[in-house]
Image (tube, rainbow, N blue to C red):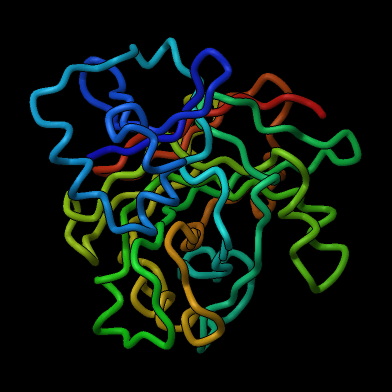
Length: 282
């Protein structure tokens, strides 16, 4: 299934994306689940799949406003310097353990919404990535068991305010400006994609390809990331792990390539979908 969070007529909902639009799963489950995070916490994805059988869309996609896939995650962990070509272009060395920073929910927007370049910076950079969402809680999980805890996959643009990010050794400031990153358009459930599959990752700016790689080029794969993070703290249903960006970021180009007001940026993950946003000034 492709699961999405959305709003219609000012009311927040969640549903399943089908060919004709979106099925309102919140209505179908009669309000027993407030949002997708609570669906995952109750291990109810299979229940929702059963409700879907034979159903047509309740709304066309162009009538609803999508929200970030999980609007209210407990944690958003982002893995830095995790693709070989990105490490090389930055003049760094592969890290022996995954490097993580945190994002806040308020720093992200949905598919179709503008990412907002803060007026305090001109260095607004793209980072196409694959995100995973945790389905079953885990603590100190073994690498071999990590696949059991993945609810599904989504696209992510870990947009960076580079000059603010690089002012100090801590990256968090440049990653947490309001409405800068994007998360969507939906969650493809884990049963649709074999765990550890090699998936293409592509970023386009105004239709021009600026990043291309595949998830096999990760230094620390998804299982390693889950095992590492679950050692730090319990991973809970609805937590998000953003798994790293390939090479080709704007900051490392000569001359640098920054996103500007009015630009369109897309992140495409093979078998998942395309996340599209415009750029606006905040």
